[in-house]
Length: 240
Length: 118
Image (cartoon, rainbow over all chains, first blue to last red; front, side):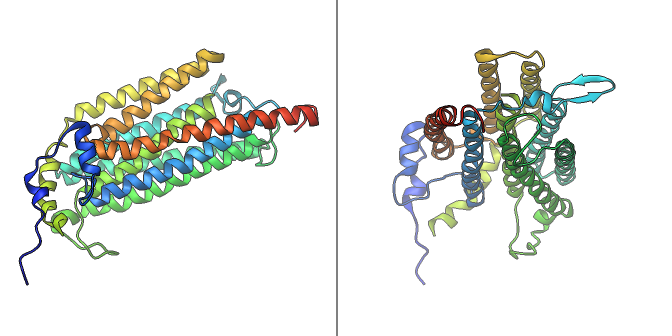
């Protein structure tokens, strides 16, 4: 066999910054996303597609809310709770928001410790993230049960426009499913980190290929995205 | 094939610049908390109309920006990836504009033909 084919351009030309670099990276006969592994680039592209999924849900909700002639139920009141005798508008949603943001914070630190190869701290922070995520899903289950008990259905509710129920169950249901899968994803990767798979280069049970600490960052991208989607749901569905 | 060769040294170099101090994440965490609290207060104090909507949108965009830029490390990526991920979602705004126009028309027909029911 002859010597492996070399790409002289990739090794000799320094990478340009800024817009010139953007044009150069997107030019032909090379990989576009430099400094980024395929795993990470593909996670970003998956998240981009997921952005469109949630974008469509939020647009459908907007269209339903704008086109109905019946008044929209006031989310501030629908999601209010009585805590210790005081009436707190939207309080459960506020707590859920803080829980999810905290989980993003712990995840960001887990990624950082992952790159420092601090196995225990990474795994512990990922488990804490999963715990926050599970708490979020638990509160969402509570919220769903409460609303269903109060008579909210996808086709009707006691307070106004029928589309409220369908938008609510669709959007929060899909988001909750994403959180649930995120928790499972986190637990699987945290177990691998804890066991030291990335030090011992243990082959994965499914792919039989050794993993790297970068998977912590990729998991983190997914998790932060779930938090990001909640930022938009919180603003458009609950606060608007 | 060239990819596989150049990949290994690249990877080593690139984990290097990802070592941000933990303090950065704690500061962003704190900012996200403050911004969430502020958007909750918009509802708590019952602000209405354009003031409410603009405040909600400002706090939302600031939170989204902080999460994407710092937590998802987008601020340290090359422009090729940043534009590939950030620009396409902006086109969703065209879809939004279409559906606003459509919704106004549907509302108009409902008011005209159903007299405000449904």
